[in-house]
Length: 505
Ligand code: HEM
Ligand code: SF4
Ligand code: SF4
Image 1 (cartoon, protein in one colour):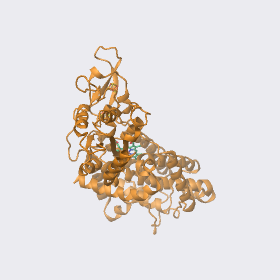
Image 2 (cartoon, rainbow, N blue to C red; image 1 turned 60 degrees about the horizontal axis):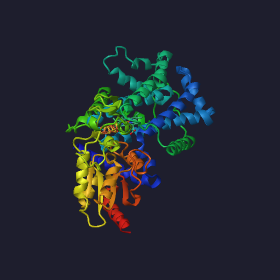
Image 3 (cartoon, rainbow, N blue to C red; image 1 turned 45 degrees about the horizontal axis):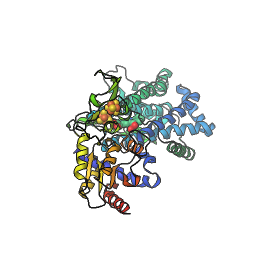
Image 4 (cartoon, rainbow, N blue to C red; image 1 turned 90 degrees about the horizontal axis):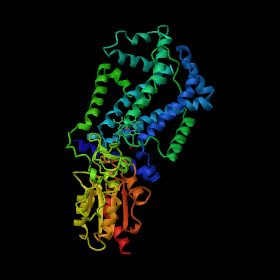
């Protein structure tokens, strides 16, 4: 069932990707930066919000007038800031939804990766009240509708003794103190919790990508600016608690549950929201999966170089004081609760070299379930199976590329992540005569299941990151097939044939 949902979700991304791919290449594709784009939109909300706050009057009588002043009299700055504030908030909802869907369909939330997923749920519970209290502050007819419906919803929570809806019976009963409380929640309380929540959300990741590429930031900001100028955000009529608002233009990004409060009942709306959150929270354990063994350090071969710490995308390795009495001061230590068995640390370790002639191949750090020795044995077994020019391909175990490569009969070694493969294995395959060419089949930047697999591999091949590819390896003997995991997996056989043609020449 879950796998079927993953497949359906990938279909959605495939549909979205096509038009996007025409305008952006892999690294620049917004679909590869959804978390970072959300953070960027929240920055715009914050900066524009500070400007609005300077002119905003937190009183029942003053709020509407101050927003009208900003919109109409100070339209060139205040009006633009108001619209930017509104549209960036809406855009954040779109990117959050796509971000959640993408992490889900690409399986980045299960097992030991549960923490980042589960800490995302409170973020949703903060973002919506943040937007909703914003609509409330304008104190127009929409605010009146939102305030009264929200009060009905809050009154349904049994912990409050006084009825909140009672505050909205007439303009006279509505106190400035209550209004100041809303302003405090929107301007200070919720934003502080949100910042803390985002920090917690990415806390366990090594180098979380919280900024999109500069060009993307500039282009998105420009698009929001044009939208704000062409279609400025406007208020409804001033709120009047003696009358019922007739025609409302709802912001469906934030207010989509409000019609349900009237159509169903506040109790059922709470039940729906809690049920959706509960389903999201239990997803990482649904269904329970077999846990792979974490990476294992063998002290005899660890020289304390720290490369595994730098390259682990999940902060699962740390350096600790040496315990074996050798002259090295530090040793690597793996936290089994954080290690997702991607093998990237093995690809980073200088001792994971298949050229070792004496003894068995035991690197300083290795995956018990997919060891460096097993990779070497696979290269030796598969090399030479192909007709000349002989190609050995490497593909990530979770990707469709591996499946397609097997289907096309390409001799393919499976790796947990492409960055599990130290460049010395490529050198080994070529220099020991196991292959005339090596084809790497991985996912484009931003789609790597383990975050940095494609980046680290490219940097190692380009000799910009340790362990580097040795100079004696001819670049023409390596083909890198970074494909999108959504649609291009079918091009695996084409890539393979094209590479063989180029080797023949
Ligand atoms: C305000 C809303 C959110 C923001 C700003 C945000 C931001 C981010 C950022 C910056 C990353 C790191 C990306 C990277 O470096 O690879 C990330 C990762 C992630 N987020 Fe969010 N996120 C939000 C909401 C959510 C929600 C609601 C969920 C799910 C319920 C979620 C699930 C995840 C997962 C599963 C990862 C990847 C963890 C991994 O690779 O192990 N996020 N998010
Ligand atoms: S296997 Fe992956 S998650 Fe585990 S320590 Fe190595 S790099 Fe980190
Ligand atoms: S990369 Fe290898 S040698 Fe270096 S600290 Fe990690 S386990 Fe030890």
